[in-house]
Image (tube, rainbow, N blue to C red):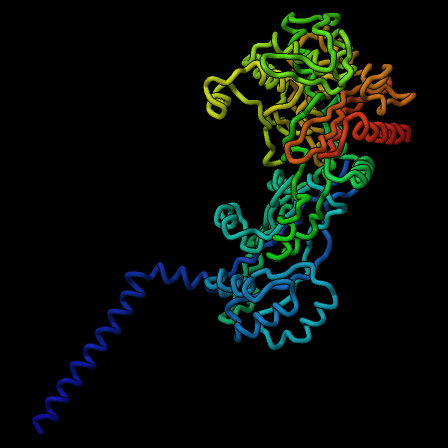
Length: 581
């Protein structure tokens, strides 16, 4: 009896404690944290549906397409609706080019986004679409959406490509309105002009029930339309672009860049081998990516702005201009006679022409590309001033083109030589090599084209660029600067470049055309990766006045005069036909 009474008392106290706990919990939820839980309830009741903008397209100067949008069937997944993860992974890996490990990683990365729609695959072909649709009832987490996807009209490096935003990009760009499914510019113009191309997302606010069904209560002033991205008009001419692409495809690795003399706009931007940007849009597997990275021809390398090479003799106008500008030589100044080489200190430096050029003036030294003349000239040039002068002519510095990750090239300093070769290094022999565009000197093909463009423009240097305007605006102004040389000295170099192509026995006569004025300089630069030299031809061409400048570069492609110059003649002739249409 006593034990029963004792248990009854215990039960009463237990019930009282339970009631007090319930009252305290209700007080905490409704009074102390009422605002917090009201906000959570409101968020469950109200859904924000984002409206994606249409990405701006990219066209050439004649409004011909380069990068456009096309309809795409895209497959999404809702992680919170996955019933059998293993079965889902196997199903997706069987039907799409991703391994089970890659798919499992996607699910893991989105484990806290249970009711977010996660983009899995884009641009799904009809056969796969039907196959997935037949089995979709077994996988309630999967569903399709019809959306736009990027399409690139031809392989190239300058547009770059868009791809699904990465986790790190998402965390960084989330405050700008990006979602985990956003497509973002990864390289090239797509990255450079991401903000202009992307546009601004809109939204619609929905009231939903516990099952997520739209209650359709909110009808006024609770949506914001999306603002589509801007359409870009480039300076590129698709016809010339495709022609220079074809020229390079027959020659192997290299690049061709063509500029408008008066504006600095890029008319053609060909780097070969190239790659198809479309392979990245729908997602690429690790195996495919590794195959690209391991390709010894380096198709992802944009040789125009990411490749740096010794320029060889196309660099010789720089020391020539330095000598003229500093009164070290004049046009008719003759230096040491070329007998096939020159002894400087303990070393004999050969000229490319073993029989020797004889005693030449400055313009003939450029015309025949005599190394000995520039060996001798190097002895008169102070090293540091030569270094600075090169950079003042916009070589071995970034040209400022509207593309990401442009490389600057390299002109060594005294300090660099001391740190790498020792404090007692002699600068005499180093200058000898640098003056003919060899040694440690490295430039990009774009820099050389921009320099020759300035020579064609009587010393006015334009920032090279691909973007011209949007579809509704006038062309944007670009930065112009001047080469640090007098018009008289530029004229001397111009006359020498004309003789290179049009004079008897000039090294660039393979670039001459009967009815077009072509100016240029050949270069055959030593290549530490191969016994075959790099072939260069840089120059410009015009009718009444110079209209285009160009650089033809063939990586380990042979001789500048024999291999690069003929391509220059072909592209100039093709451009001439275009301007007559």
